[in-house]
Length: 57
Image (tube, rainbow, N blue to C red; front, side, top):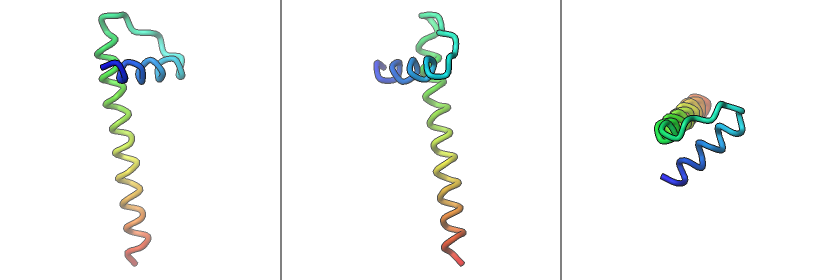
């Protein structure tokens, strides 16, 4: 859990988001981690589709 909290705190501090309360830290960390993973998955999927279309023809 410690690396996840570190990642979420870095994200919050980088973008100037208001710090969550101590009781909301875990939920915020999970939310940020899930959103980052979704963004990475979408970017990877788009890249794979574009590369397949570019080299298929």
